[in-house]
Length: 220
Image (cartoon, rainbow, N blue to C red; front, side):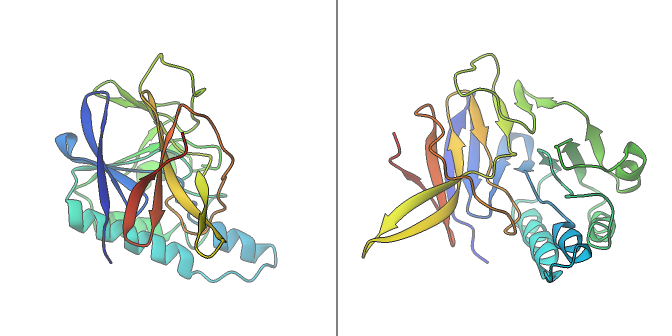
């Protein structure tokens, strides 16, 4: 697995966007990601849709690789760690945490997260109901309005994507980061999600992700 990177400045901090759908903040030794949706495939299977369990395992393996690569001291998940309550895929998280007890693990609650505080405590996860803040950067699941300049926020939730035309006249949709002066919207970390490729606002610069590359594109 390769990791492509793009370093940006956000609220006077250097942040590294990477092709594995996350951000590394070197100064604070923090890995930042959103929307893992662990247990989504099991939730689908429960309702009669045959989806293999491999998707959650692959996502956790990617997270494991990122931790080995960056050696962070903490991980911040900006919402939707789980998809729909406890199931056998979500319980993989317990095993994962046992392998990384030295890591501080923060969860900012998303609209899908149904883990109780007792369960997150069992998994060794610090639970933040509304938001979490580090050095004047706020982590909150839902993005603010694009024109809101009242805070510096990193969010998730919308699973941003971008549509591109590549030769010969072929349309592709790629996950992306959306970056403005006051907000970053993370791509969904899970590969088992849809993409919202609506053109959100001229306030944002788009950083598309393809294989082992992350690169800016001219949307504005």
